[in-house]
Amino acid sequence: MPATPALRRTFAVLAALPLLALAACGYGSQAKENTEHAVAGAAKVDGLDSVKIGYFGNLTHATALVGRHEGLFQKELGGTTAQYATFNAGPSEIEALNSESIDIGWIGPSPAINGYLKSDGTNLRIISGSASGGVKLVVDPEKIKSLKDVRGKKIATPQLGNTQDVAFLNWISEQGWKVDAESGKGDVSVVRTDNKITPDAYKSGSIDGAWVPEPTASKLVAEGGKVLLDEADLWPDKKFVITNVIVRQDFLKKHPEAVEAVLRASVRTNRWIDANPEKAKAAANAQLKTDTGKALPADVLAPAWRSIRVTDDPLAATLNTEAEHAVEAGLLQKPDLTGIYDLTPLNKVLKAEGEPEVDDAGLGVE
Image (cartoon, rainbow, N blue to C red; front, top):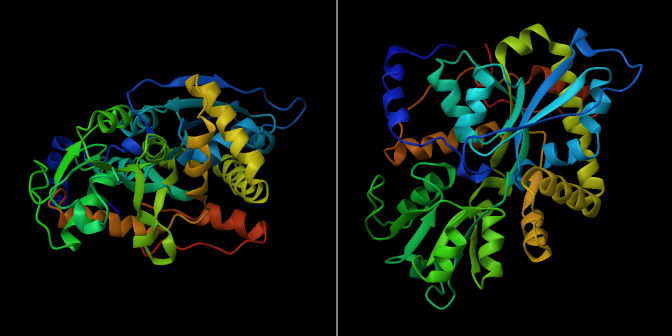
């Protein structure tokens, strides 16, 4: 459903704040493109020469990492080539989707919301979940020994208004403490720090801790930090969305079989990850090395991997709650997210695979 005129007025706010740029997914704006080889002799899906798939070189995109490394996407696409692009920032992937440089992408909840709202609900749909969890509050155990000790300390988040920043601001509010959302000043000093430099900031003592995604959280632990709180503990059933699958609306309309092939690969990859956790962890790390030039060390990889759960369910209710938290923090006017989901192709795949269908929490296409 198109956004209302009142909602359109919020776009200036969204543009002014990097609210929905998911720093959990990485940094920068450049994409690396790579192409697989189509299965010899196999038919093309929907007559397409290729399907362009985007994702980030980050463990929260484990489904894409493992599915690519193990050739599961290419297997389902058969004679249609799986063409990949890896990104370092949510806005750059949304830009690639808008320009038709990619067709389908793995992305965090915040840039998905942003992309949907800024286009008046015309450019993308969320068509599947991918991952839950992987966000922690890690602190200097010499300075912070309990949750109440967070008051008065300097705690980093990845970026003003990003997914983790909003979650931390909401948690602060629930403690009864006050912080100005934009400046980060108040009962807690919220220090917006790029995840790439957060470990160095921690080592130097310029921050006392950080509310950050994996693998940054485990990097801080490797530097002597202590996990004070796992964000999963704040959510029902310890589940909240950290990565979704999105698609261009026109691609979904014109090429439903190709979309189903990618979703079938995603579902089967998630089953393979669950059944082969150690092999999957190694596969994800191997693909990370290919994509970023550097694998994660074992003392970072192991705890980071344990905290992330792959899932087909987009956990739609938690997406809506995350948006509500941003509204409560004063960083976003109440959005209309009706129509952001189209789970019809996913539920078709899940039914064929003998898996239970998933729900869009009332935010699906009408």
